[in-house]
Length: 460
View 1 (cartoon, rainbow, N blue to C red):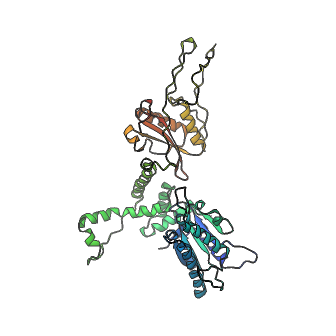
View 2: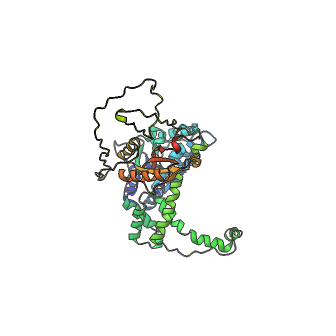
View 3: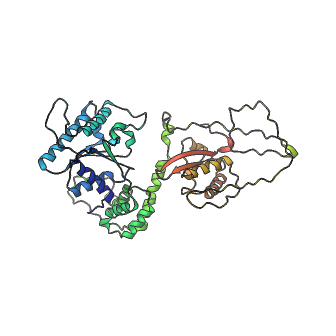
């Protein structure tokens, strides 16, 4: 099977590796190339394809090997594998590299809860030392004065900002952010479905339908298509006999015919997978189970109190804003003078025009939604985010089991107002909140409750 290699990826790795095998006078070449990016975009697999194309032998280290109950073992392992790779270059006379997968998972520090061990310090220090002295890498307790061959190091990870800052400086590590473009995704997905004879037009439609998904999504989607045949096989054999039929069986292994990879079926299966992703993203049960998780835990807001309406001249009464919040810091012991109103003027209740990467010049109609909530939605759109609307009853509120009211993320103000009004009407006795979502990183940036049951706080 011929897989697709991104020209950008191939060019970056080929230049870095070749440059480390060439002596450029007066030029200091970084020894380490850090390939980082979102999860599931095929960083390690693209590296393997490049190595195979260039005929390069690889010595692997996993991020899971960078911790040990014995202090110093991981750093010694790095030095040992580096020296072994340098010996391969000398003996076999061909390019070899040392590759460390998921370096940030083994040597990174994500938050104050991540333990920073002696091994973590030694791993960072060892990589820095090798990058500064690539031909003089010694094992603990021994010394060899023979210079080693320079060995390029390729590291992969998701977030290199978690690593020790001096390690990732430009003189030691060259960075390459891998985010496949549409053409790259189409080429990679065509390679995934190459054996299934999926037409190029359908591959492009599939990629465009799930354009925000990572590469591993399409590989998992292909695997899902076989689920029906495997399920039928299990029912045919029986749940109690499936183990005997598969493991150490004298019968020949089961054979499955190639399923029908039609576009509509794959889109349907893909939407089910996306729905499962959203359920994971929307469930924050850890915040209820572990109150020590203060970074994500949001304390309950103070109880809302409806102020007493103030009498106005000419028999008018000030209408209370149901979403206003009582200010505990304000001194309410002093009476404020009531301004004298000589004449009443007609107030224009229309909203100002709002632009969000497209033409939103239409006037938004008047709405019962509070000005505070409207201002929050304007702020969400102004920051380039989209709006989600969620609701929950009092019982489910205790477990933070919110449900989506809209089946999509809203990208304009008028639609957000209409959907929020509908949600407030249909769930008048429940909690309702708006959510600001950054679609680029798929992260919830803001959560604000705009309605509570009967105007009071929950007991949780």
